[in-house]
View 1 (tube, rainbow, N blue to C red):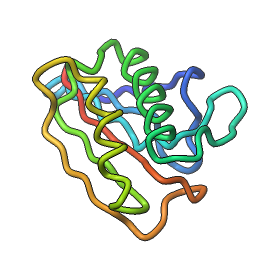
View 2: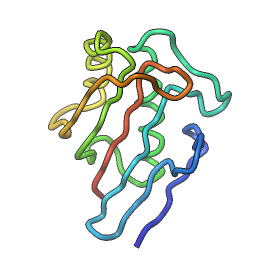
View 3: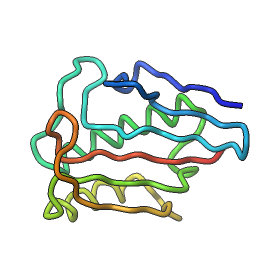
Length: 127
C-alpha cells in the first residue's frame, strides 16, 4: 500500500519524515519538502533564493527519479519562501523545470525554514 522512497542522490531526512512516499491507492507519490542542501556534503547551496531554488529542484528531480517518475508527472507543488520578495527569482527557476502543463501550485512566505534557507518545495506526483 505504501512504499518509502529513499535516494542518496538527494539529502537525507533531517527529521522523522521520508524523502517521498509512493502510495498504491491512486498511484500517488508524496515528496517531502526539499531544501537547497547538497546531498554529498550536507552543505546549503547558494546564497540567493534563485540559486537555492535550483538546488531544491535538482533534489526533487532525484527523489522523483528514485520513485520512477519525473516533473511531467507532478500534479501539485507547494513552495515555502522565507521572503515573498524572492518570489520572482524562485518562480523563474521553478518554471524552467516544467516544459508544459505545469502542476497546480501554492506559494507563500513563512516565518523561517529549516537551516535558515530561503526556499523549500514539496510535491505530489502521479505514476
